[in-house]
Image (cartoon, rainbow, N blue to C red; front, top):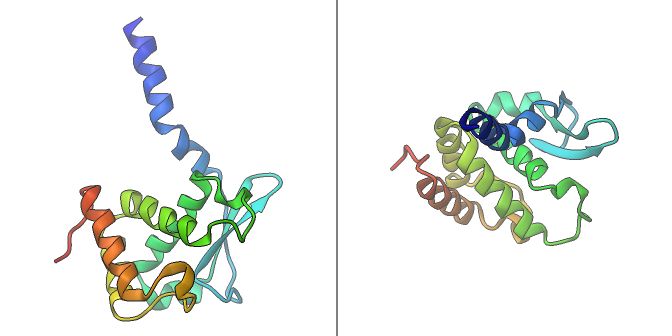
Length: 147
């Protein structure tokens, strides 16, 4: 009985990651963004990223990919695009801060701190605000390795 309980607990703990492993990532050098998630009939969602931009920003790209996986985990790709955009983006940032590699989080933090981010400040906040928010999220999840 204990073995059955342990197995069920492991399945519950890792089920979100099993489903994430089935989300295809598609490189698109023409994408006018770092990464986006889109609903997909077969997979539920696909993540599209710009490999050129990722090359330019280095490890920070991993944070943005994790951010998109956060949208998938939270089911945001099924919501109307205009529904709570600032809240959705903050939630995806928080998910990424809890799940991305600490070096990717730190790289994104410095990218934001130096002014890199979406020009849509109404949704993401000013880049320095986003950096501070990301730092707080990472600290709260024990993932912070920076100053």
